[in-house]
Length: 219
Length: 291
Image (cartoon, rainbow over all chains, first blue to last red; front, side, top):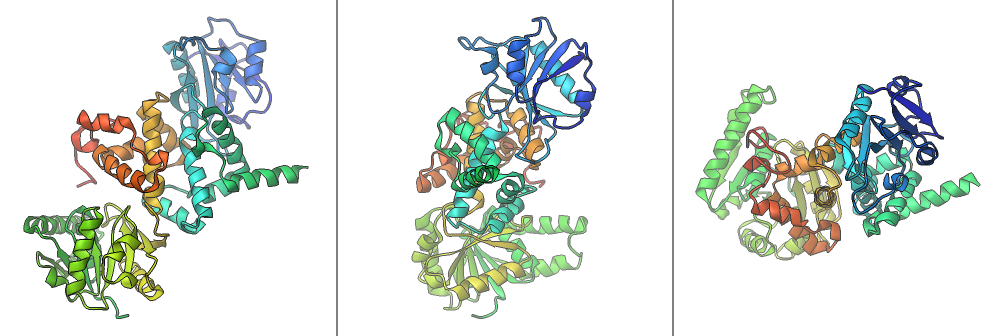
């Protein structure tokens, strides 16, 4: 397994607290992991050597190409993007979405995967699209649940109960969003709506209300 | 409204047969109707096999098996449903077919009999409109496989009386099921959310966002779902998903409900899902629902 060093650049949503992945880093590691809300900028300011086993940049809602540049669908080298999936204020899950580009080398992808998996994380690989896998799939579903609640399809409890009993979900969408923060859902789905331009990602009314209230409370 | 003692099931397909198991197992006299004698015979054999397995697994007392089978009667004559207090329709998802059935049932059943439909997509009010008793009509959508799944989505039509709905609700609870109340709206709750969600997962594959295995792994790990959307689609079958999409999109015209082109190509290629050994994933066996 490649050794890796961690370059901190602001608050990390993926690793807000101590974690075996951080503990496994070495000051002189061969691979580079840029962590935090400014990870992309830190990478641009301190681009590591091209022969590193892998370079991993923590992503927010942006695409990896914003940091690496893109050209003719031929972009990609030893650089990958990543984010541990996390809903709003909930703890990060075990899932790492590992982002590749068209020409990302299999060796870099495998080395990054090994490093995350060695720390007990579960890796799903995806291409460089807005929302990666999970947000791309769940945000329209969350928006629809909020909209149908407004339209009185059923009560919040019955909506949640139906999806839990019918599909074995551990938690219904309304309870999940209220627990993790509707305003966070607003921010993610807004970013996806801007990137994709599809109505399904437009923030639901309840999410807009929650975001405005959060802003007002912060003033 | 009289207490419900005798239950009629119209339609002896997978859903009808499953609902009949639920009713007979809960102690109701259960009459299941189908015009095809072979369908009834098949349902009887499968019901006995299911109950035997339930006994083996300790889910059903051995002495209960003959009791349940004694409560279960199959018939090809619709008149045999004349003494039913409720009749649950579980026939093909076609409004004209359902209207024809309910018109016949209205002629043979007494006035107190409640009519229910297990439709998953068609409007309860529209079906009720051709039943001759729109005030005594409810939606009771069981989940597949009905004999294992507890959820029942219950919907009143516009003309359903509250007394009818309450009686049907209590009956549903007496079946040992867990009812939820939903508006009479396309797909009710479950299919309204599930069909577009699964289509979105198919579109991720179409657009090259990720491989099916990674999509399923991500959803299960991030959200704790027991099954990934593409694994679930492989169980549902691409042919069924296409029908569900056509029904839902035809009613709602919502873009997410439209059938993704990949589904049609997979059907053409014979990749229907688990039942053909290949869908989004490959399978070594084609057994369904642990049968």
